[in-house]
Length: 171
Image 1 (cartoon, rainbow, N blue to C red):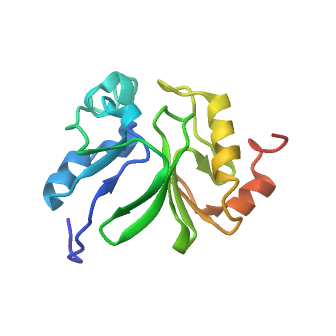
Image 2 (cartoon, helix red, strand yellow):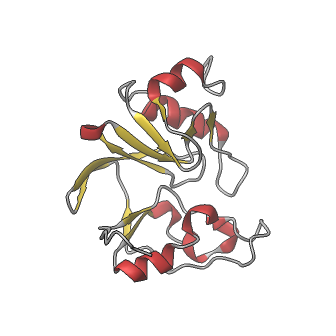
């Protein structure tokens, strides 16, 4: 599992949908590291009806151990050697967050913003209007050169999405 001998410091969850937590407990236990998750999704790791695993034919219902730490406010954070800003970006799910590393001009957006698209809002707790507002008010205010590392698909930038994302045009 760890041929290069890297030692992660923590697991930062942008949200708790099944496709983002499948190996959570295995990785947490292997490396002996804590899990961070927004408090609004505290029960999602334990509940297949909330994390979405009961709605898809994925083989089993997912029930993970609770997170070790709950994120509650937008704030500057430091975990190990990493300093970043927590940005609440609800809409894809109620506790969706983005981790913004200003020094590197990188935002880990989970499933809020993708190259040419946005996150789905048809799963439990999803809200299209709230997602559009989160993207407009929180993400599109970041510097245009900020790289967006989403939960799925290629890397993009804030500037590219401002110019060409069809879900954001006209807002």
